Length: 364
Ligand SMILES: *Cc1c(COP(=O)(O)O)cnc(C)c1O
Image (tube, protein in one colour):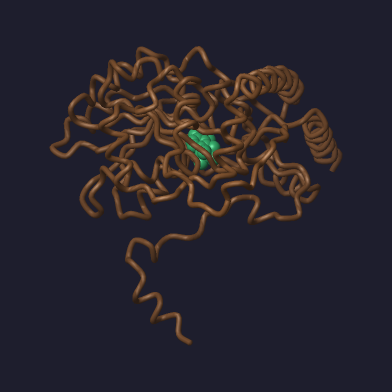
C-alpha cells in the first residue's frame, strides 16, 4: 500500500501537523506525573447505570445549573463541553473562516489555541508577553487596528506555563480595545487557585467576553474530560450550532454534578489549600538550590524554574520515572522547566532527585 495516496488526499494544513505529544504518550513507563498540572487527589464518585441505554442530553440541564450557580452566572450563559479544549475548538470553528481569519495569542502561553487553529487552517498572530510576562498593548493595538482584526484573542490568566495573572485593569483594557471587533477569550483553567480574580461576575458588562473553565485541574477530574464556556447567550447559541449532538457522556455528567455539589466544592477548596501550602514548601526548597532560578509566579498549581544543565536534568528525571514539563521551546523560556505541585510523596521524590542530580554533576 502506498502512503503517497493517503498523503495526497490529506488536507494541506493537516499534512504539516504531527499528533499531540503528551508525556503520557512518550514516556508510558513513568511513575511520577508532575508534567500536566493534574491534581494529586483522586476522589470517589458513585455512578448509576440506569440511563446508559439512552443517548444523553446534549447539554444536561442540571449540570448547566450547577455550574452556573458555582460561577454566579445564568444557565443560558453556560456551555458544557469535552474539556475546555473542546471549547477552544468550538470557538474557532464557529467564528473563524478557514484560510481567511486568524486568532491572536500572547506567548508564552497554553499551546492548544495555536494547535486548534492550525488544524482548521485558521491563522495565528502573536502579541508576545513582555519580559515581565505582561500584555504588550502596543502589539495588541496593532492587531486591533488591522483591517481584518483577529476574530478571537486568547488571554490565559492565571497563565500556563508562567503562573502569572493578568491584572484586571489590563483585561478591561483589552476588552475595550477589541470591543465590536473580536471576542476576548479569557482562559480561567486555573482560576480556583486565584478565585478572587475570576471574571464570571462581569459577563453582563462585556458582550465580547468569553471565559473558559475546566474540571481538569482544581476539581481533580482530568480523566472525565469536562469543561465549560461562559459567555452571553448569543455566543452560547452560536457554539451550540457546531457542537456534537451528544458530547457529554452520562457518567461524565453524573460525576461532574457530584463534584459541583456543596460537598464537592468544599473538598475541592480544601485540596486547593493543601496544594498551595505544598507549593510554598516546594518553591522554597527548590529555589534554595543555586542551579535553579524561579521564573514567573504562583497563581496556579505549578512552579517554573530556569535550570542549569536543563537537558541533562530532564534526562535524569525521566530515567528515574519522574516527569515534569520542559518549556524551553517557548518564547522567553529558555531552559525553563514547569513542575506541577503533586502529592507530598511526589514532591519529596522530586526534591530528592533534583538534589541528587546536581550533587553528581558537581562531583564530576
Ligand atoms: C489544562 C488546560 C486546559 C484544558 O483543559 P481541559 O478541560 O482538560 O481540556 C485549558 N487551558 C489551559 C490554560 C490549561 O492549562
